[in-house]
Length: 174
Image (cartoon, rainbow, N blue to C red; front, side):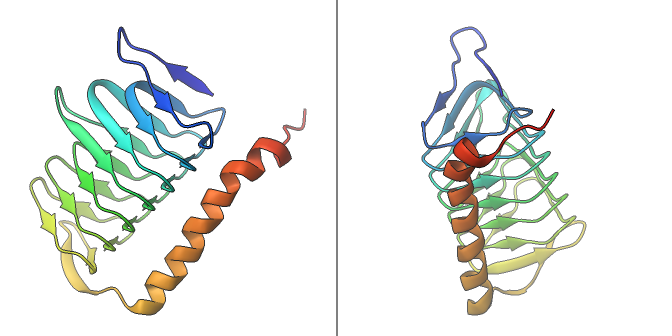
């Protein structure tokens, strides 16, 4: 894995987190317990700050950044889908950010929100808890059913388990 300091900005990574060898973690980044960071992900805290709390999954090819003096905050048990982009925003606990979606500056994604695949959440948007948003620009299209919350809880537990499994079971084949 490529973990870089940038001047005095040094990542803080809990030992139970998993960072895939081809992912990059740069600068002022904090990764909590059992945070999963997939292949090709870039988490860049070179002049902003990035906080990813316990149990969150940052899937393959995700890009996370923050503006000068800004913060991108990802709370507990969040799933960020493949190739999503997060920039200077707040993602509350148990949210799901769909594949190839974009969450831009000064956005707040509420607790248990689902952002659909390919959605673009515009600057300054505030998405209330338990909402489903989709489209370009993203609009609320419904409320998250209880069965979806149960499903995503299982998926989050799977990624948390991968953090320890990959440390002992993942072997590169030459």
